[in-house]
Amino acid sequence: MLTEFGKVFAFILTAILFVIIAVFAAKLVRPARPTKEKLTTYECGENPEGSPWVKFNIRFYVVALIFLIFDVEVVMLIPWALVYQEGGIIGFLVGAIFLILLGLGMAYEWRKGDLEWARPDIAPPKLNNTEPPEQEKEPELSLVE
Amino acid sequence: MMYDWLYNATGSEVIAAIIQSLMPLFLFLLPFALFAVLLERKVSGHMQDRLGPMRVGYHGLLQTIADIIKLIQKEDIIAASNDKKFFNLSPLIVFIGSYAAFAAIPFSGAFLGSNIDLGIIYIVAVTGIVVAGILMGGWASNNKYSLLGAMRSAAQIISYEIPTLLVVVTVIMITGTMNLYTMSEWQTEHFWNWLILGGPVFGIQKILLIPLMIVSFLIIFLSTLAEVNRTPFDIPEAESELVSGYHTEYSGMKFAIFFLAEYANMFAISVIVSALFLGGFQSPIGYVGNLFGLPWLIPFEQFFWFAFKGIFFVFVQMWLRWTLPRFRVDQLMAFCWKYLIPFSFVILLIVGLITVL
View 1 (cartoon, chains in turn blue, brown):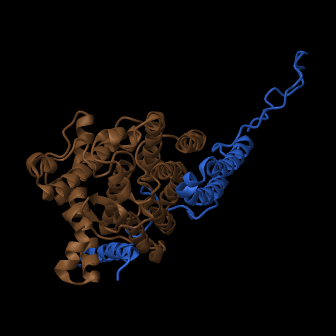
View 2 (view 1 turned 90 degrees about the horizontal axis):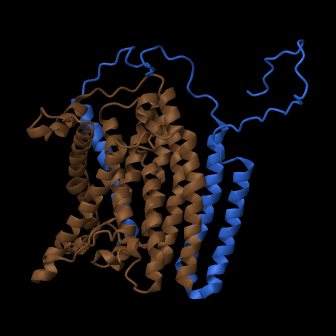
View 3 (view 1 turned 90 degrees about the vertical axis):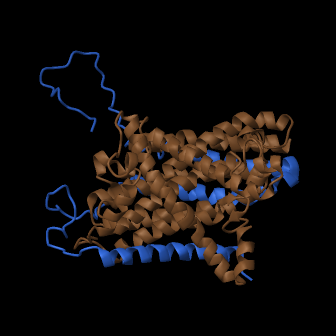
């Protein structure tokens, strides 16, 4: 007896075999004449400069972390979404409280600035400018990065 | 169902399942990709007041076939500094992710790869594998453009998965099922029974649901558009900045596999959105087969409507590509986290209230 997941597995198997056969069939037809120039990494015609495997912006990891929290909570919502109507208004409130907690977490992240992609501007400290600036002061002192 | 027919014809469940899993690829996806690549070039051309490919065949009809012949002959360059194992594995994983989704998509009343009860959740889960493939390819390419494109792509796909999931949960709350086939059957054969117009249950609930469902439809269409990296959300492969993103280093057949997976994804999201909100394979105006008493005609009609809705949304994606400029990366993230997610949250809560009261 083949289950429904067995049929899904047949699809995955088809995808794997299709890619492998297509790549190998192309291998029989295509030329293979590698030279040193061809085997350099593409960088708009220049010689590659340094390694691309560098430190990355921390924002990507923050987004991944927030995604993880939300994704797990949405997965927990799915069984609730299927059965909550049997519990009537109580059934709805159970999920709603959960969702509101999730919303509060999101509001906190928003307030903390974790949803901003660009680095938040550093606000320049307010200077007391009631008196005219003296001549000795350096006028180009900028506190904004 | 096609599976039962194949089982009776061949007498073996395994052979029937294998034949059935080959059918969407060879009878539908590859011809569709041939057609869609040409359509994209023609649509692009005409929207920019030029003609597009004209030389190969009548009005360029054979252009894609010529392109495939060219791609097969191209040398497959694996640069010396690439991480070869992952570099070769990446197209495979990307293609598995996009083709496995077709197992749960109902093509018509008579063809459904696997009548799996998880349905839409299975599709969301399995298309998540694509992210791993893209990151793998970008990292293994050892190329600055590829890595940047892959990282952007991963951040974008996972961000936009949340509004998609929230809208999917909303739909599950209304329909009470995750199976796409049952969902399409539930939105029976006239367009006023579609979920975007409140579903087949008449009454005050339907009227209250209509505006919410239209907004949900827009949210899921935009966020799935971002998940397949199409314009205006195409910063992962922004041609003017990153050459072509995570597949910059790929050539020959592996590039063709990425390309095929992209078109498969475009079509998959179109039909998933239409199965959720626009009745899937159901006809908007009733069936000719019912009218003349020809029941064998109905599955073919259903397939026609399925393909029609899918190709229409693929056309809308191409249309958007030449209409809207590309988002900046911070705008893209802000649009997802500050607009789409709060809106879908609120819609989920309101729909919960409406369906309970």
